[in-house]
Length: 114
Length: 113
Image: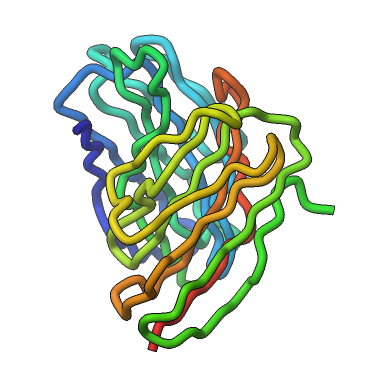
């Protein structure tokens, strides 16, 4: 089945530093979503990217979808302690038909040191 | 009230016992999902249901069963729990095109001893 590889698995940064997590797929993706899970919490939807080369911003967060729609990234500028958590990418099968359940990456756990 | 409610929040059970995890949603969505989360493995799909009469196995369905009692209710059962089913379980729901993503419940932390 489809796999979405996410790196790095862990990232420690000093508060104020930037952070980036990457998702890669061997197959073309129809779209990709990003979620954030705070420690002890549940995943919360952040955004969906659909178009080739799409870039979306949410305050200090920048999301990109690759031109070939096989990779995506989430970049956080000037991290804050509130950014702590695990970030997941997720994508459905490209030729999904009626099977449109999401496959999640393994996540990147971000620690922000004050 | 939460859009997706899971019960119980925590459960400790013995090996071999049958256990049911329950999920209900107020989003009015047809699609519901059960995921399992283990450290370093992300979220893995156990079962999903696109409507009351449509239930499908996910990538790790062995040892689990589900029941879609109504549009709003989707329960997960472990017929005979084993220790490697110790994990955090999430229920989620989405609309047809999940343009607004999945809405997850708060999770059930299950420990099998």
